[in-house]
Amino acid sequence: MQLTNRSEVVVNKVMTFKERLYFPAIISGLVITVKHLFKKRATVKYPEEIRPVAPIYRGLHVLKRDEQGRENCTACGLCAVACPAEAITMTAAERKKGEEHLYREEKYAAVYEINMLRCIFCGLCEEACPKEAIFLTDRMLPSDMNRANFIFGKDKLVEGVSNDSRIDISKRTNAHRKD
Ligand code: SF4
Ligand code: SF4
Image 1 (cartoon, rainbow, N blue to C red):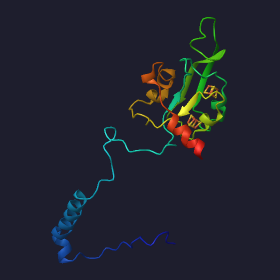
Image 2: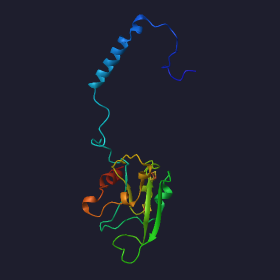
Image 3: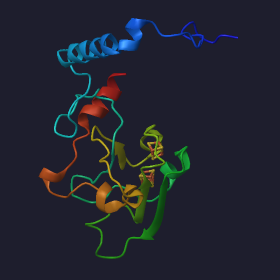
Image 4: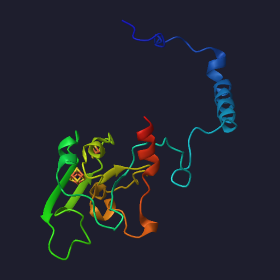
């Protein structure tokens, strides 16, 4: 049974004189190569060049802080339960007296990790979060040769405190609201 009409029957036919010369085949191959040199490239030189993405693109996660710089996450675990890839793990801790400026809620994630090799960027963690703590962003996951570097902890996930290091998610959330 043929699955496509592209299959060719292999035969041991004797090559013609033209085929035995090889030069016509080499020249037609070179012509194809030269033609491709003048075609518009389909690839970009990532990471120097980055293609624009849709406002609702689901890229690298961010753990948000509130306007006072406190971590929003309360380690409720709903994102981990919702995650179909079981990529999220966390350890909860009680906020101590004097830590009110660090954590918004009485409970916080002492450890929060996402295994980016498991993550399928479905966005269900973002949807499950009741505290507006986790969002996917338009940032690309950086490449790496070491598998261990794809376990992203709080050091890579929580946004910075200063205004310059905040991760803007407004484009993405506004696009969702329009839907
Ligand atoms: S985006 Fe999907 S797969 Fe990735 S951590 Fe969130 S819920 Fe899990
Ligand atoms: S990110 Fe949201 S859903 Fe996940 S543990 Fe923190 S508060 Fe809960």
